[in-house]
Image 1: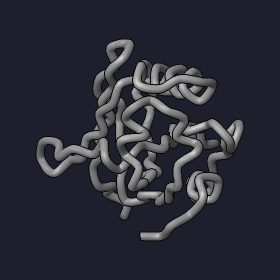
Image 2 (image 1 turned 180 degrees about the vertical axis):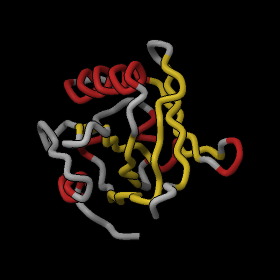
Image 3 (image 1 turned 135 degrees about the vertical axis):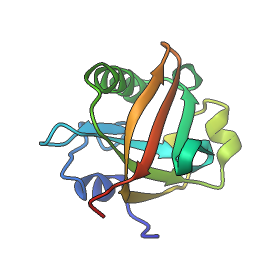
Image 4 (image 1 turned 45 degrees about the vertical axis):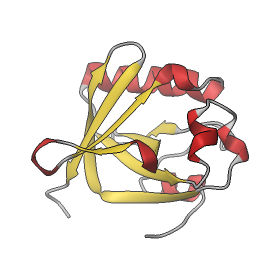
Length: 135
């Protein structure tokens, strides 16, 4: 697993973050949404898939506002979602809703996975990923 900065991980997909300090999602030129999701939110999904489940209310700030807007659009348009996994040992800090920009973390572009926003209820969301057939 390659350990990258968030900017470099998003660049692998051709996506540029609006603000490298707080953005955690960005669109690619082909219309895919790239998202950075916490490794500890990964769950086994049905039929060999991987689900990322979280609450939008768990954290706040301009990155959250942008992320909410982007996943709502991806959900409505059924856009392809590409994954950057964020890993940290400070999961309790993240789960508390504290400023996660202050924790040490690594990023990994998971190019073999392609996803879709399966659920979005205004707070809770589920993004399901499966192996890309083009890998």
